Image (tube, one colour):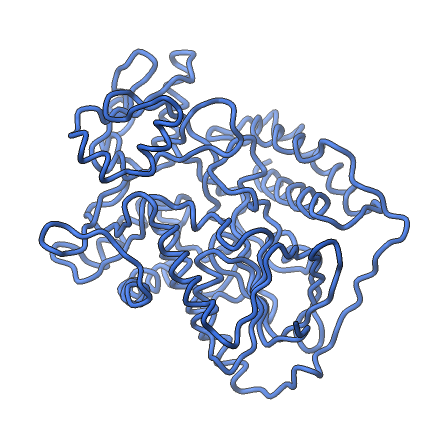
Length: 486
C-alpha cells in the first residue's frame, strides 16, 4: 500500500464513510479504522435519522425550533440552518445508495416520533437504523477505486507538516508513517471515559486528543449527553440502549413503586428531551432512595412491538425479559458528546486542512443537548460539507503526492508498558464526579488526580500501543471535561 494520499480519514462511522463517497474520484483517499469496519457508534444507532423530506405537516422551521428547544437555544444558527435544509438531500442520497427505510401499508416511508420532536419525522429501519445506513454507505465506499481501507489500524500520533499532515499508524505491532494533504477526524465519541456507556469499545476520544495536542480549538467537551433509557443490568460497561422510539410509540416511565412520575417534572412527560428525562429520573431516584426504574410498553399490541422493535425485543429476551409482558429495567448512562473539535460550517478545524465530522466534532448544531436522531443527520450533512470543501481546496492546488513532507515519529528502545488500571481509575472518577447531576466536590478532587495521570502518560517513557493511546486519550478527555466544569 502506498504511503502518500490526498486525504486520510480516521474512522468508519457514518461521517467518515460519507465524506469518502463525496470526495472527487481524482483524489487518493485512505480510510483507517481502529478495529473492525462496522465497530462504531453509528452502527449502534437504533432510533433513526431525523429529516423533513417531502413533508405533509412538517417544515424545516419546525425541525429548527425543536432542535433549538432541546439545545437550550445555545445552537449555532448557521450550522443548524445547513443541517435542516440539507437533510432531504442526504436522505435521498442514502436511499439511492440502497438504504432500506421502513414503509407503511400505503408504501410511504414510515416516520416515527421521539422525545423533543413536534412531528413524526424520524426515518428508520426497524430499530437498527444506524447499522443499515453505515452498512450501505460502506458497501458504496468499497467499490471506489480511489479509496484504500485499513482495518485494525491504530492512529497513534499526528503532526502538521509544510505540505499537510503525517500520521503514525500502527498495524500488527508495526509503526508506519502515512502522509496526506488534508486529514478528516471521524473518530467518534468519548463514552469509554465513563463506567457505563452505550458507546462501542472504540469510543475513547482519540481524535479529539490528537487534535488538541496539535493545538486545535476544542469546545464544549463538558456537554455530555446521558441517555435516560439504557438497559439496567448493573454489570456491563457497554449498556444496551432502549431506543427513544420506544417512548415515541407510547411507553411509560415508572419508578420503583411502579408509578408514572414524569408529570411531576415536565409537561411533555416521557417525550421531554433526553437531558430533562435523565435529570428527572436521577432526581426521582434520590427522592425515593432507589435506582430502580422501568420502561413499560406492555399496553401496546405484542405483534406490533415484535415487528417494530425486533432487535430490542430479542436482546431483552436474552436477558429474560419479554417487553410485551414485562417492564424493562432502565437507568441513564453516558450516550453522546455535543462538544468536540470545533469546526466551521465546512467541517474544518482551527488548523488549516484538519477537518472533523460526526461525534468528535463540534459543529454547534446540538447546542447544550442533542435532539434525538439528529446525530446521524449531522454526520452525513457535515461529512459532505467537509468533502466538498476539500475538493474545492485541493482542486485548485497541484501537489505531487511523492513530494509530500514526512514527519519523524521516534520509537523509544527503552519504553515500558503503562501501569495497569489507569483507564479503570479514570472511568470511576468521571462516573462519580460528572454524571447527570455533577458532584462538584468529586470533580475538584478528580481533576487533580486526572491531571497527574495525564502528565505521567505524556512525560513517561511508555510503549506506544493501543493501551497507551487509549489511556492518554481518556486522561486528556477527562481533563478537558473537568477543566470546563470546575
